[in-house]
Each structure stands twice: as C-alpha cells, then as structure tokens.
View (cartoon, rainbow, N blue to C red):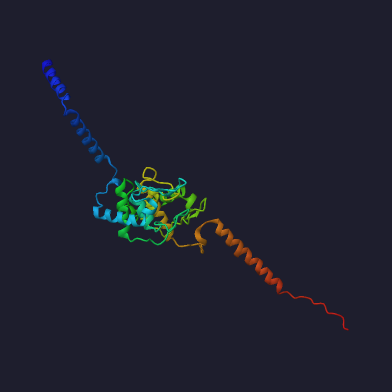
Length: 286
C-alpha cells in the first residue's frame, strides 16, 4: 500500500513539473470561476432575451439622443468644475431607463435641478431598445414583469399593509395621500397619482434623482406591490367628504377655512352693515 502511494505521488510530482501544468491549472480555474458566476449571477443581469438587433438599435438611439450628456459609451461626462454633467449609466439597469425615458423625464431639454415628468419623446419599442442597450453595459434592476405589476390578486389586508409601508417610508416626501411635496434646493417629490404600477415599482427599484433606492433587500417585491395597490386604491376612492382640496392635508384645508369660511362671514357682515338706515343731518334753512 505504501509502495502504491509513493508511485502515485511520484507521478503527480512529475506532472507538476511539466510545462503544461500551469496552463492546465489556469484553464481549470477559469472554467470553474465562469461556471460559478453563471450559476450564482443575479437574474436581473441576464440579458439573453435582448437580441443583438434590439441592442444595436438602442445604441444608435443613444448615440443620437443621449450621448451629448452621458457620453458616447454611457460613461458619463464631467463639467470643467468637476461636477456631473451627465452621470454614468453603466450598471443602472433597464428599469432605470424605462422609468426615466418612459415618463418623459429623459431626454432633458436642458440641465436643471430636477427632471420633470412630461410626454415621452420615444415610443414603447424605442424605450425598450434603449433599455436593452444600457442593460447590456452592466447588471442592474430589470424591468418588472406583468406578474409583478399586477395587484388584482392582493387582498384588502395586503392593501392595508401596503399603506403601512407607504406611511413609514414615503409620506415624508410624497404626503399621506401621495400628492407630492416641496423639497430643499428647488426640488419636489412628484405626485404619485396617474402613475402606472410599472413606473411606481421602477422608481422604488432605482431611486430616481433624490429618491432613495428601495431594493428587494429593503422592501421585497411583494411589499412594493402592496404599496402600489394601496396607492391605486386611494386614487380610485371617491371624495366622500366633498371637496378634496388637492388632498394635501391641513394647509389647503386651513386656507380654505380662512379665505372661504371666515372671509365669507366678514363679507356678509360688511354687506349687512351697509344696508342699515343712515341718519342724515339737515342743514338750517337760509
């Protein structure tokens, strides 16, 4: 047994001295690391569904419409003072592009403190091509699927839970009714009414502009769907109390009470006093 062990050890030692040993070990190591990456890579880094033609179309659109700010290869452009004229888009993922371009925020007509929502410049196919090209540059959040944006299967209890998540994480900026609000340095949290479920989830995934990123590690996809369900439920609910006054809370309600309520009473009082009889002094006859 010892003799056999020595023979095997001698053969292995001889092979280790071979000039092919180092390349063989390197090839085995590369194959092993590639296999592990393929097995453990996140799903949102998989761009197998985006064919080369779509990516090429997206690159052509990017070069014409986006490269002046973000660089020809999406590497970003710095200003002379070291600021960011256009940030790098490598690794932002398809969801960020679908949100920014699909809501009309990009491309911007000119740099500003905040990109405002407006009518999209590109159609759905062009947005998909741009998203596929940017996604091919590096892994990032993928565009939510139809199953992830559908909230019709959620119960009332889950919608209530979504309201709890929203009040805990979002109301500081977006207001309790999702009507938006002012932020420092001339920025604002936009209203969430009229926004599609897909774009709401993409905003949570990517954290556009000053919004924080709510990754799946912070809020799971189910949590995000519950928040969307809560917002859509509020959006569809009628105003049982009468005028909604914008739904922005006590500021608009207090202003309405002062201007319309108390102002109306003051106006009525002035009108009443102006209608009372007045005594006129008659001058002495000449």
